[in-house]
Length: 515
Ligand code: XMP
Image (cartoon, rainbow, N blue to C red; front, top):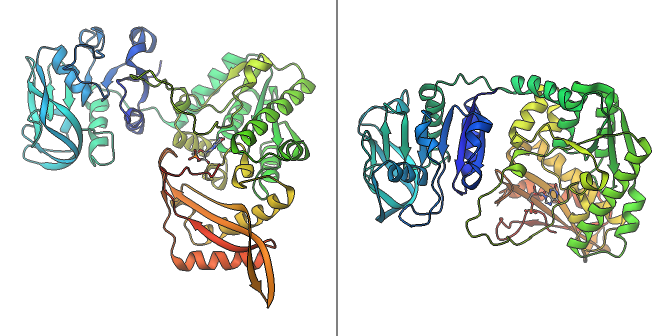
């Protein structure tokens, strides 16, 4: 069984980052919310435990507390923020409502050497850490000593080295604690003694075995979208079971320039994977006729996608399994202490309705991976870098980049403008700095003049954002020279556009896509 670090989630916004830092240290980690943790010791057989931060206060009567086995199983424990406070209060110390809350950057001073700091900090070092706490540890449990202090937290880092219990009041998992990743690495390697052999090569070979064991001699179908996740999942499954896999590529006609051909060439040509290419462009255009409401567009495309996929799967017949490129962030259950439903901003398109409708079992080889790990796996499987490092692309495709009604004419114009924009970005060497860049076409015509002639054509919008996860984003700050050059090229080369504007809205308040 793979060495696992169990991260008990108390509802911090940044718990996923803890998992990433542990995995970056070459150790597999899983997040389990506090309200589901009771059987996690037997189920996951973890080798070390990390308690996340959280919005609660241990000074309240009703506050989530970890089960006793956390303290009695002999496993090393690292408590972060609320996790440290839980450690202190459960083991006999005192936590009080703080009068000097610390939020943001703080200076940590190391007052004693300890194994957590090995090779990172020594006694007397001062360094930046990221704090976010209102409550304060005021008395340590027996066996603990303070090894790091900050202005607002006299017990900023605490250690009971005999029991391997460590607590940090700051957040080592965020980038604003520059040496935080090294502390987490020390915890898993030097304190928990884990070797750090969880690499993509290791994952690759063990996943191939798992797929073989799950599928046996059964047949698997996989939906390709043109995106990285479904491609990586399909190539991996093909490696495991060969011709028992058939890929179905539903071409809805809403992809970018040349994208459909690239998918077909890569899968049929390069990998020799059985592929059904369904040209459903006309059906999608017909279904979208007269639809301009964003949610109705999304539902129309999502529904028809399932219909077409289902039809093709029936034609093939005999499939027992459906492959999906589900990722770890979609799987992690989040802790909600408020219990209220969250508002739907957009109904993201996915093929979530398929398994129920088709009565198929799921093969989800990526469900333990984060997006950057999927890219690493893709490289390991030999997928071309240009494919793996592509910017994210939404399931409903160009339809949601054409506010208003979708038509073949508009799609054609948008595709050309988008291709020029991306070409300029690549030529300027900016592609990998940008999370996502794309053109939009507005349903507005404006007057212009070209070669002494009056023009009356569409407006193109250039959008580019930086982000780490798509949840928040900043607009990308192009130089005026770049923008001017790109606008000129688009207007000169694309018939149908006579004006180019740039979207400089961050998220929030905007979203990345316009619909
Ligand atoms: P928003 O527009 O919500 O987008 O800020 C956040 C990220 O999600 C992508 N996106 C989608 N991806 N199906 C997808 O697979 C969708 O329906 C969808 N809508 C938005 C968007 O491109 C951005 O990366």
